[in-house]
Length: 337
Ligand code: NAD
Ligand code: ZN
Ligand code: ZN
Image 1 (cartoon, rainbow, N blue to C red):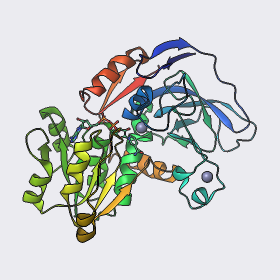
Image 2: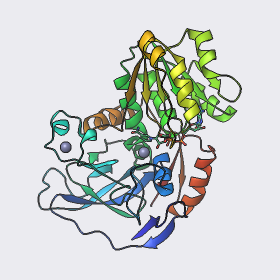
Image 3: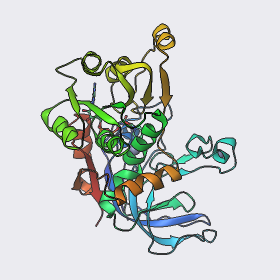
Image 4: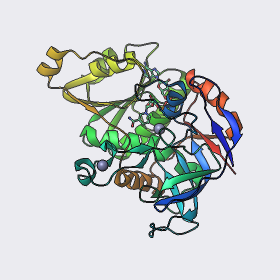
């Protein structure tokens, strides 16, 4: 099978011919039809984070396709069923986190396209208990970005506790951010969006943001305090320490800052202001199978639709180059068909 492989951090990916993986008892084999390209894939290929991926690695954790083989212990799926393979490849199912429905915090978790080969390939192995079905009526291409960008954005908004009618700032209108705006609007929040460039800000407006701020022209936190006296919540998806510091300063008293983007550098948090202003800081990592089911339903109901450009697997190095420059509007989805 054809797959995009990274063998050394910061090198280019190579398209290789790999054997189709063998199915063990709890696995399913998925013929991948489409896979979105997440900024996390670029972090993986650069070795950006303290926990490193396996090498060589087939990245990709927004793969969707059809089940073509099923392990002996998986009984709830059929051949031909349409499923997606999220970042959470598997968890232990037995620890406190798993038992509380917080499987994305499981210490035994494995991650598709990171600790296990992912979906930048014609076929991908998945754990039968952790794939999630794609609702009828949602195409493979439209469903792919929801398996990470969609569910991560949706979950971050959920944990923010921001209520309908309150202000939510979405920082970074990229793959995650452009979906976060749509989920926030669908959840009844009023949105202010922050990124740079006419194209991304016009998209944010079109997707329902009431105010759009160009971070190269204005200081977002100052503008947000002028306009709104601060936001009730902010979800920061930008790959930038400066964006996190600005996000922190944008929150009104009693508000919530949800940290989602994963820039390699750290920010410092002022203790005095956090205490006196009663600020809540929440880290949010992808979403559970239940979150995914909910987030897919928004799309199946026509309330959310990723803005997508379709490319082929052969173009992955150019896609990464554009992503590094912040030149992608919406999400790139690789079609394997
Ligand atoms: P992306 O490249 O599509 O989007 C990032 C956006 O941030 C770009 O539009 C860029 O212009 C914008 N940006 C850069 N600097 C900014 C600033 N100072 N202020 C406002 N916007 C700014 O990336 P993506 O695929 O959306 O991923 C974003 C980040 O989220 C990555 O670090 C990724 O690893 C991380 N991520 C986290 C989770 C999670 O579970 N927490 C899941 C998926 C991705
Ligand atoms: Zn991702
Ligand atoms: Zn567990």
